[in-house]
Amino acid sequence: MEQKVDNFKDALAFGQDGEKEVASLLLKKGYAVLPLYQFEDDISPKIIEINGSHISPDLTIFKQNKCTFLEVKRKRQWVEFKGVIETGCNYRHYLHYKKIANLTGVDLFMAFLHEEKMPTGIFFVNINEKGRYWDGIVKGKKVSPPMFFWNINSLKKINL
Figure 1 (tube, rainbow, N blue to C red):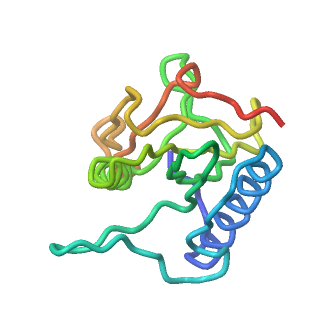
Figure 2: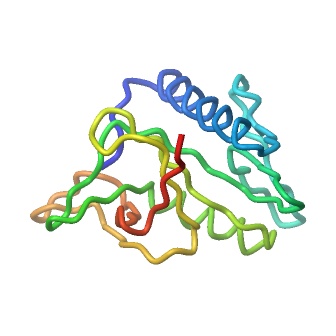
């Protein structure tokens, strides 16, 4: 399910704090980090092409002559579906991230900062990793926008 946050400003601050935490950990692990939002701006940086633009992933990270995009999602809970623990993002955003990875040829990873429900920590997955689409409908009623989930066993944990 999507995270419940009262308003856009609160959601932005919640997410930006998560981005700072992930960036700080990556710096300690020897990565160079380009935070595209600079942790302050309300305007999303864009990748521009002739036919339009695309919102950039949160961080661009560099290590050992390799560049990678990283989209950070801060979470309070995991999703349990048929006994499987999962995490994910809005399906529309997932399609957007896939398009950016294909357009640029740069690997794009999702980083999920799980804080309240065990297991906690930072988990990541390549956007091209197999996952599960959910249409947001339960018993014939729309309860959420469509989502895309990854099984916890598909995720790698960043050791602190």
